[in-house]
Image 1 (cartoon, helix red, strand yellow):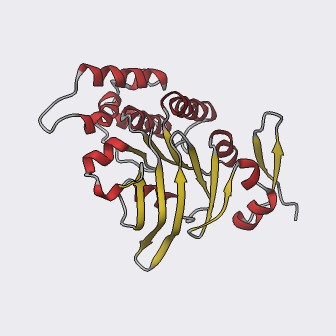
Image 2 (cartoon, helix red, strand yellow):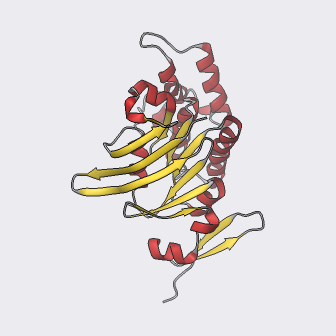
Length: 259
């Protein structure tokens, strides 16, 4: 189990500041979901943790600055599911998921029986066994996205970053993928930080939400605290109804404008 900390983290692209002074502490085993409109800074925060964009401020894992870790050690600590991964068309699904084991294989080594058995188990739990021998170029966008999630799960890193992990999935596979992540979190203390547009799903699975707007955190807390009609109207510019189910689920429903 590992914690993840953001201390005044800023991300800039040229003259454009994408993320301002993000300060959050994600406890071991916690699920934090970043929400907000397009361009709010959600992906920038995740990419900073993954080492894909330069940043100011300090990102820590278990209290130690992440920049002090080698790329190989970082990959053993943090698994990242991007919005648009690079996936070679001629690679099979099984070969692609097996790449998640690279941080644990020596420079001149090869995959062990344990690595292959672990990958087979992940493929089975995500109902992807049928794609193990198929070329990625023959799969649909949703099938490929599920394999990206499988690769990250196979990495067995204590921290999992998910950038819009269900955007190309149908409702059944959305639930299947998020249920697997949630089960791994509860059974193995996985720490999860996700960026999601589906507010109902975000509130259903995450322990806490952080609402970003123009790079700033403008609301943070439980789904019941953050997902309020007036808050969503102010920062998303939409009219919604928010329903609270008896089990605590918060459902966000867009309201049609009749004007």
